[in-house]
Length: 291
Image (tube, rainbow, N blue to C red):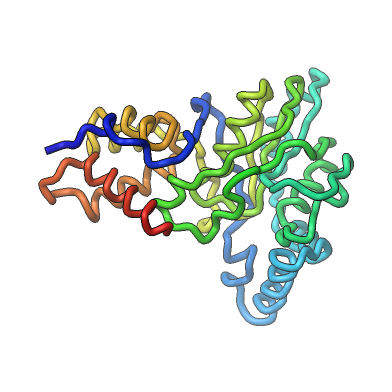
């Protein structure tokens, strides 16, 4: 028998709010993750890239990061970014690049020293710095990630429960470009986008250095994925996700929706139990284990 979810407290301590998708949320990806970290290269090239990546990712080495960014930056991505921001430039709207990052001990307006001792991965900052020059954009030093910094090692279901939250002033007259080193499920970028939109800003482009496949990704949940989710979990999925996580299921990223579909196919289909009950049990298990 299906449990009355409304009678139990939600699984998250505070709601993970997200704004609706409006279209144009493509993540422009420069290349494959194996190209970024060297695992997809061979011989001396692989060895050199792995060393640079280690320095840029864990030792705050800006020179190493810049060499990687210079190699990774795709003309195709840059051309698309230029196309997206050109209408705003013509209108005189300021362009602002922003990366998801924690608060810093000493923030400088020019962004040259946007780093503190506890932050070691400077790849996003160097990518942002290079784009700011190429696109004649400012670098944001106000918006910060105040919770759940660094989700890379989290598995799929804990990512639903432990989502980032952002703080900081949003410029209502600015057009924002979201920048990061790697996109996985897109949850962090979705949260950053939502913070900017709630603050009255506009998000005009999203780009990362890498994704596992190297292909451009759509943040927004596709109609096809949404239809499959409804078939798998029923029409109550939207209300369920809003109650347990804090936002409508339609505001999942497409990668997040695909995660739920794969799990349903592997663990739920044909077991005779109510899919939403299985889903809540799996989320509760993740919360209890702190996976």
